[in-house]
Image (cartoon, rainbow, N blue to C red):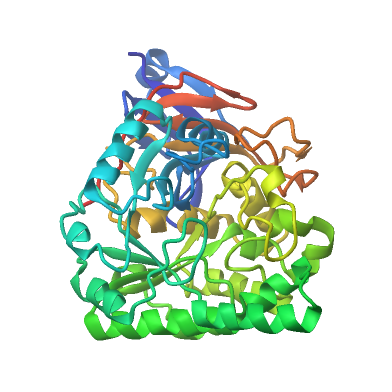
Length: 446
């Protein structure tokens, strides 16, 4: 196999941006050149000229819903892994609220086999918690299972874990990451009754953030943090959406944290002022909240209180997104455009490009202890993304790969695009088209 040299890119890696070249042999990175490259290397390689382009590690998305098995009218492992690669996401971790739910070891094994046949990107799957499946969770091999997911607020799939004794048993027992969707179901239901009575029954979208309120988020997140502190649990709070929840976190280096948190692209990009324009397209759980919340989340990404940026990619058919605050489906597709959106915030001066790489590539690899991915390092798998930082384009809809066929970012102008995605050393996406796709690898955890 002829080695591949990505030549003269701006490499963004481990807090640095520097001109350099990356040599790929087989599946792995063989060498990183910052200085002059030996003539013998040039003569033996296929060359990809990358002057003026950015080279980053493949994005690792720790929070997706690919809907496979059982909900494949919305999405499946094949379509969504293709969408991921088109967006520079080379590895994903999929949630358990499918049909059947991934709440037993057998269901998890079945899902792994399905991914071995259908997924074009590197994959891992959470094992889902219920009120009564602790014995199944205890059987998990956490060198293969990325973590345990708990819904502490109801969402798609009806997997609410509402018994305090069940929650405490899980927090006390699980030796790996416990990833939590934290919204208080008691507060949500009380808010539903209140606002339904006040409005006469038909609740427009603007009530969504009032029902799934900041109070509901904080009450549940604070309970999770209290239990994790008491039991020494490795807690990961998913999709933080409020400024108040940030008070539960600290900004120690990631390697010193036992309680970590994630921001999602939606909550960093949108705020409640966008509901009027986008409508149900941006309805999600937890709800998109105030401008002040969004600004606080952005600050928390920059100062280290939030550790990971993910998508919560959750496709629904457009027909399922119709209705009012209570009936329209929550969630939307975002994995294909998460990197361009975040680099748009770099263009706007909100984040540094090194911060985006840290939060979307390095930190997921560190937090989940993923083997040899998430960095541009010699000996690591060659999961790489070549980005053009001066490619102005507008999402028109025809670029959408996700099976549901729509995006809330349709019509958005971008200043960067994904040119190439390399997976395990192979070019699998080249501006506008997939290349050389084949079944990929499961992620391994140290």
